[in-house]
Image (cartoon, rainbow, N blue to C red; front, side):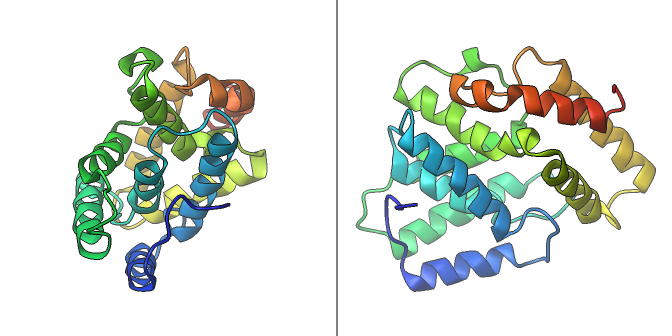
Length: 205
């Protein structure tokens, strides 16, 4: 993928270090690389209105992640703003937009397409959030590995029975929604597979 901007080596190293701490079964830099793959698909398809801002939001959206905490997204957004100001001060990046996109990932599964406008900013938002959720429509073995990875990350932070209860509630909530994906681009490509995965994970099939 041809990135819309080049990060200084020190910035990239700091970012990779952030994703390595603490060690993660799913929300590591490999997850970022998978989301970047979907970012590239959108780039080649409908395109982005603010490709650089979305790209940076993808890179930083899980930079700070501790299972069970409620402020991971806001702390990741703050880190993104801090590091953009430090290493890309002359790049003209809309850092508030980067932070806004990252903050929105705290509310996955709560949005409907109509929550965002049909202008370029609204479409960018939908596509960005769908890039992060595209794992739901992955091949069954990939989805299962993701599901196990989330459980592993929460082990030791939340009692097992409580994790399973909340996890099943979250997945059932996604399955019950009229639209799992917010954009037409991802809805057409991944909705059917996502529903199969969610039905299997929640015991509906």
